[in-house]
Image (cartoon, rainbow over all chains, first blue to last red; front, side, top):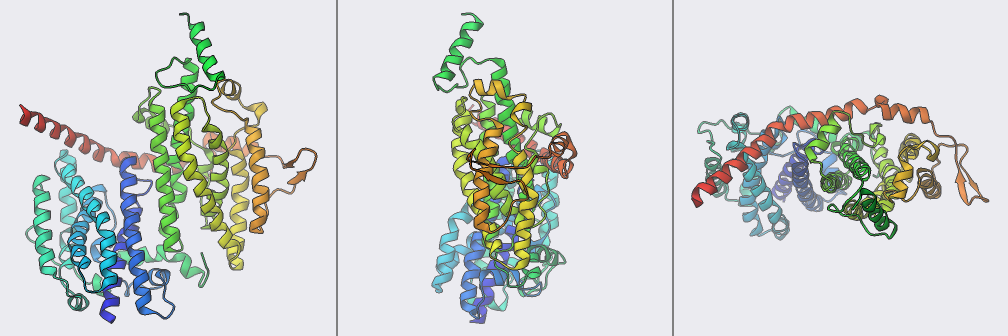
Length: 244
Length: 315
């Protein structure tokens, strides 16, 4: 049972933290239409994280709620991928981050839709249409920026370089993923193929030498997560037991 | 036909409640007034994203975060409809944004006040959106067709926002003593600036006469302000909170609430750029615009390349 809780929290934390990062763009996007689009994605991810936290809370019992799980766990308890907690540097890096995650999430949720755990399968089923849109939107932006101007191409190269060590973590299974019976090898294969195809169209290249920064899935994070949580959890921590 | 004839036909349409459409003849001043007002309204939506956006990362529950994020996104959407409505009058979105960033165009002064606590998210929804709605309901019947139609869509969403704002405060008003104090403090800070949103007194308002004649506006600043005060003075009782005006009192004869003098010095100061956040709001918009330059250029360049490739293929 613990593995199921951990796995659900892994997905919940990852979608929440990426949503939190994306929502930093709200009101600051490069053009109004894209401000709206990225906020939309932030909202979808937030909605997914809520379904997952609600299920995790059910499994944990003991008066746990979606909010107690999101707002009252600390840095070492969060299980999100390191990739999604990295600070936004520019629009290119935000796009590449979203693209990497969306492609991963697409293939992962395709498997989860078929999962023997019907709760998880139902959550995946509900999210898959959103994820398909996120994957399409971010792919289009990867192509547009990669094959746009010299500046946008250069910024994409920087983003790819900056993020190159944070993709393998998606595919290196933790104990709780092994117990969930997810075929991460297959996902990695599908991911590589898709990313390479899109990069080719974008006149970009995925780096062949990467190192694997890991730890997020088991609660060892970058220094950035502490600040995200300090900000996000501030009201719940300052006014314990208050209703909002 | 003489210009006078055109003017006569134009005014007849207005008097007969027929909407003016983009291709219709209209006096220059009518066009200019509408451009000024609609673009100012669009800018207000976009700048208005900033004070509320300030609390997205700190919203106290996942549900509140989702509601707030969706609300700020709605405002971006309103900005889009309004920029499009203004474009029908022959100005481009780029020009309008340029006017905002250079300070030539104004936006609603209310967004030059800071959002200091979570309760401000409630107070903005209830008071600021509440004041905006009174103005916007009137604008659903404004004489320029595209503006009126944009307002119909916007009004539906705004009244939803107002209810959400009130609900934020309602929860706080039933909460701990600290939450109650937070609620009252936000009402105290947002009350007077909300009243200022209706603009100067009728006796001092320069744009009003023609706007009424052309049915761009249908109610005066003072009328709308009084409607707002009458509405809020009742609603605040449900919260068990008070409005920070010792002179606020029901007047049985007028059938309206009497209220104290607005601090017009403060109003003009904020309009002139001396509000607590004028500088930072404009800088945030400038920064977003400048940081977005390369993204917009890349998108244009890519679209161009694609068009050329398709053309080559077809050839």
